[in-house]
Amino acid sequence: MSVTVSVVVPLYNEREVIRESYRRLKEVMDGTGESYEIIFVDDGSRDETWPIAHELAEGDPRLRLLGFSRNFGHQTAITAGMDAAGGDAVVVIDADLQDPPEVIPQMIQKWREGYQVVYGLRTKREGETFFKKATAKIFYRTLNALTEVDLPVDAGDFRLIDRAVCDTLKSMPERSRYVRGLVSWVGFKQTAVEYVRAERFAGTTKYPLRKMLRLAGDALTSFSYKPLKLSILIGALVSAGGFAYAVVIICQRLFTDILVSGWATLACLTLFFNGLILIMMGIIGQYIGRIYDETKARPLYIVARRVNFDEKADRNDNR
Ligand code: UDP
Ligand code: MG
Image (cartoon, rainbow, N blue to C red; front, side, top):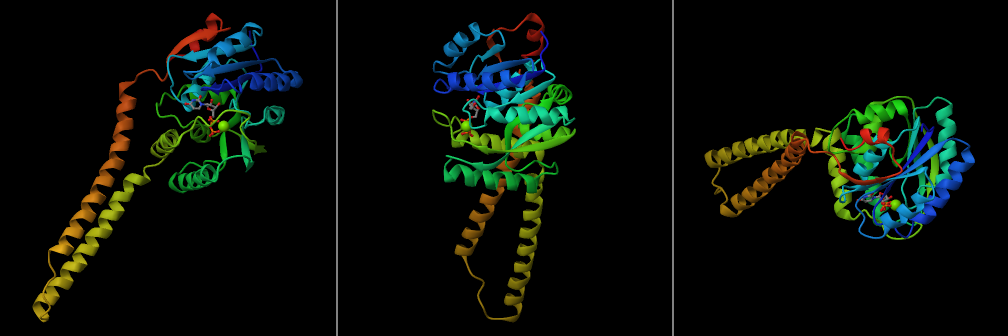
């Protein structure tokens, strides 16, 4: 069955929102008059997300389900949804209704006008903590300053992509996936639609600090070498400083009676520079770890169960 629009929804422990999310999505998609499918990707939820999704899918063949064997992460869930999507356009949207489904018709409209990527731009964020807003703000701006790719600031993964873009993404096998960055990287004709990011419908965020840091690390290492270059810069500065200081000491020894100061200075210097070296090694380690992940070439995700997928769609997922 070929469809025009596929809507991909990643879910992790979303039992409080899943029914409402499905209802709103269905309502909006029915209103567009397009043929569509909704793909729920259950990212190894530990609550009743799967049974509820299963119940919903039994009453609606256009609702398709993928269930991971464990929690693989938001970005991987999106990737799996895109891999399985059969539509001419693919929309990615969060399950918690923070991205209003009502924006999708506008996205489809832009797509019909010939744009191949339509991303949602958050003009305002409601009901998120100051910490989340501040870290997001700093993160997107730092990332932009550090990368050569032009990554739109304040855009999440809520977006519509054309089949051509989706196929390009599918051909990119990299493991540390920062999907919104990859979408910017591939280019094509892109535009934005603005929206207000609403409050979570129910439940709590599934993005603890640990996962946010992981996402930031993936984004940085996938799109920038500048952290590595940083060590060259700092190394050069420190050497220059050390050299200048040596000249000062030699002059003091030769031309004055000042005694060259002792071990406290040395201890401080040693601690400072050893710390610096360890930090730099850590940065290099981050890149090496990711290279290691790539070379192991394990599958990106493991689909343990699927519902309402036919054989043809089956071939596409789980690479
Ligand atoms: N999510 C997921 N796997 C995870 C964490 C989150 O699939 O490991 C999904 C989650 O169910 C939601 C979306 O990713 O649909 C965004 O997560 P959340 O709303 O918790 O993040 P926030 O909006 O707080 O950044
Ligand atoms: Mg959310």
